[in-house]
Structure formats: C-alpha cells, structure tokens
Length: 164
Image (cartoon, rainbow, N blue to C red; front, side, top):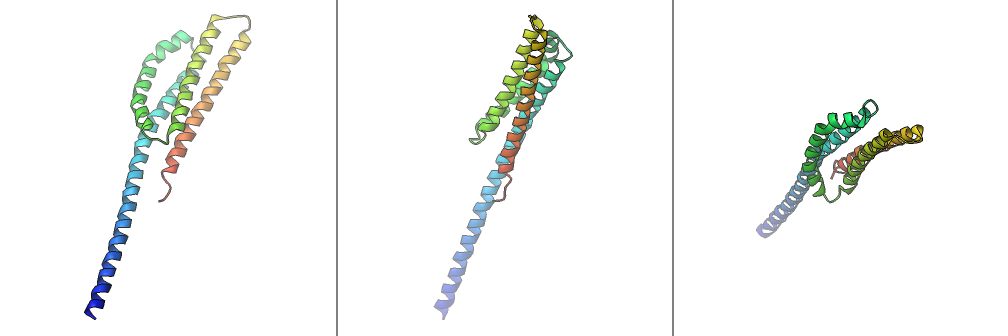
C-alpha cells in the first residue's frame, strides 16, 4: 500500500513537472516572440517615418524647383537616412523581414526616380506635357511603394501577434 501511494505520488510529481516545464517553454517562446515583435515595431516606425519624409518631400516638388527642394530637404533626408540605418540593421537580422526591406528599398528608388524626373523636366525639351506626366507617374510609383511598405510591415507584425 505504501508502495502504491509512493508510486502514485511519484507519477503525480513527474506529471506536474512535465506540465510545468511545457508551460515554461511556451512562456519562453511567447517572451521571445514578443521581444522580436517589439524590436521590429521600433525598427518599422523608423522605416515608415523615413518613407513619410520622402513622400512629403516629393509632394513639395510640385511647388518648388529641384534646386529649391534639394536645398530645403537636404537636412531632412540626411536625418531620415541616418535614423533608418540602425533600423535597417535590426531588420536585416530578422530572417523573415526580406519583404519589408525590399519594400523600403523600392520607396528609396521611387524617391530618387522623382528627383531624376524633376531634373529632366527642368532641363526642358520638346514635349513639356510628357515631362510633367513623367514626374506625375513617378509620384504615383512612390505612393504605391509607400503603401506597399506599410502593408508589408503590418503583415510582418500581425504574423507575430497570433496566439501560440
């Protein structure tokens, strides 16, 4: 009888230890996932903030010459790029964030394309209407790239918010 009670007690203890250990592993996994989500959230705030800066500067291009725009925006662009560099490294370390990185790179390419289109427009040429359409088309590409960046960041964070 003592042996049976001891056996039952031992079985209960082992079972409780197993459940506690499983719960502890789940808690550890949750803590790691939550920490990753917060790291990415901070990094994405910087990426999206820089993207918004590029978008705002591009809209200024409708009202300023390219030289005026570059003179006014040089410090803002430098600050945005500096803030983003640290965030890019943090995002690069996350193996599943490639879509967000490529979306950010597309924002940068679209912004640079707007500047080039503005330069071509200012140089003049035979068809001013076509040059204006080119600048407008590049603005559309930037808007689309900004939306893509926001969507990819949201998707990435949502994947980390699912219950375990």
